[in-house]
Image (cartoon, rainbow, N blue to C red; front, side, top):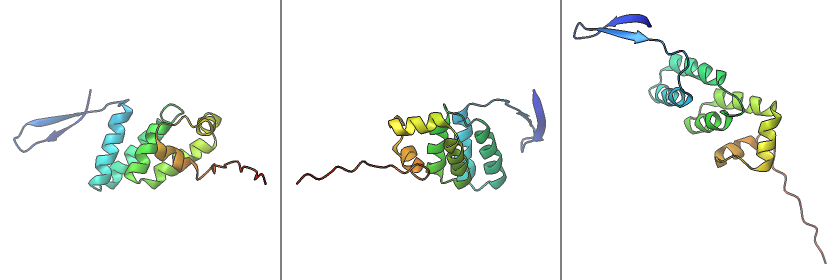
Length: 121
């Protein structure tokens, strides 16, 4: 199902189609390319599309990529989501995140408190 036809240099038409539900990894890779080549409107659009996919299962993957790509608005949205989600908080407290960057970033909203040991004299 095409959403447009563009002309190409060889006078061959290029069919552009719309993908309704692209894989998350594809969105994140496209976001990285858009950021690298400074295509601001694509960064905004892909960030919105990625944010719509944010849930407890995709949280770690999206936050890790937002950190690596240094996309602060997406990082903040992930942190706001985490702050309102008890499942993310329990995963953080259990230490069950596989990416250390994610755990480190979550310390911004939930400081890691170490229990102090009493000194015995």
